[in-house]
View 1 (cartoon, rainbow, N blue to C red):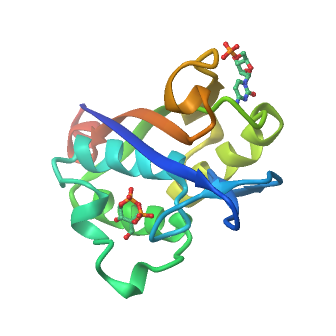
View 2 (view 1 turned 120 degrees about the vertical axis):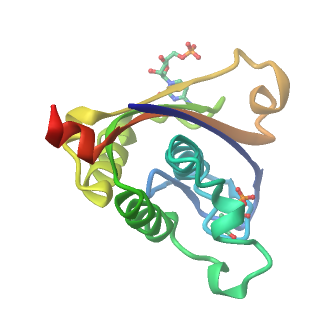
View 3 (view 1 turned 180 degrees about the vertical axis):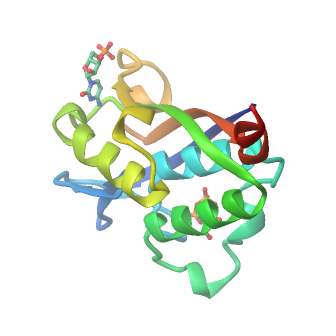
Amino acid sequence: MRIGMGYDVHRLTANRDLILGGVKIPWELGLLGHSDADVLLHAIMDALLGAAALGDIGKHFPDSDPAYSGISSLVLLSHVKKLIDSSGYEVGNIDATIIAQKPKMAPHIPEMIRNVAETLEIPVSCVNIKATTEEGLGFTGRGEGIAAQAVCLLNNKMEERES
Ligand SMILES: Nc1ccn([C@@H]2O[C@H](COP(=O)(O)O)[C@@H](O)[C@H]2O)c(=O)n1
Ligand SMILES: C[C@@]1(CO)OP(=O)(O)OP(=O)(O)OC[C@H]1O
């Protein structure tokens, strides 16, 4: 069994969609990035890659590569799934937190969980996503950006079969 953690931040700005966990959330601001800037999926991917000792999303999907311009992070997550599969691991569980003063994430979280579980081909019971404010403090509290943290466990497929 291996543990991984991921953390990412993107700046909020006008004239961009707000996409989190593959869900387009109606909001006056969106996240800035080379991809769709889905900060939640970025933290989850970094946790998965970290657990498998495969580096991070910047290594696999460099922001200097036009191929990733505007790309859906769900597409990147499906690439990460293939990398994890090829390394002999399977996802045990994922727990993630969105850190955002606004908007309210709770109504959108079930769809985010479904998107992550479907892309990784794991049960929804293996994915937990939650949200918190930082009580108005710091850059998230001022609404300048959104952060996300994630942890995951990977199981070694051979060990699972042998035990
Ligand atoms: N952007 C957010 C932030 C929080 N929530 C939900 O509200 C609860 C209370 O948040 P606090 O930061 O005041 O602890 C939190 O547990 C979430 O369920 C949310 O939906 N969207
Ligand atoms: C996702 C990638 C893809 O080019 O771009 P961004 O959306 O800018 O995201 P970031 O977390 O800043 O960097 C990782 C990049 O790989």
